[in-house]
Image (cartoon, rainbow, N blue to C red; front, side):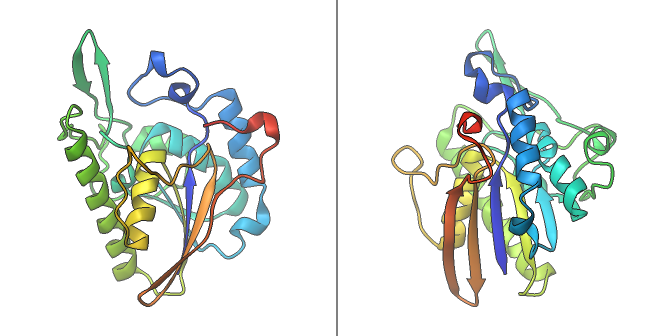
Length: 223
């Protein structure tokens, strides 16, 4: 199996962290990044399936890719970013349910859903965003669950692309490679729409590349 791990395009939160919202859209720059990614034909010629986080910015990033390639596109809620759907106002953290099925279909018309994506959202707000250790443990557990899900569901010659996030994507790479990296010291950092490729061959794992961004011109490189 080959696993292509893609970070989402620039979001409004990336562009202006001080104005953070719970489930941001991608920016005009982000739309341009996503379009450039989608036209990178050689990158996706061996890919069989596309999985995407249920967050708005990942769905918007995946939309032109799904349209350009015709890949079957499926939501997996465990691909979400650290902490889920939340925002802080006046010192109070409020969780939100996230997008429902109809809202996701407006972004990617043929997207497929797991049972835990409902009409009124998918996020249950089960994490304390003040507990970084809890958030990190949850993210790594989600990464292990996703890799187990792929292993059980698909033949080992299936190649899969994943549109996900900076924090979770780093954890997914850590778990896939069998290493433990504390994110405050070292991370597999990726630019917006940067991608990494990991090959699985039995018990062997090989990272072919990390944070490749050759589809972007210099003015479109953002973090």
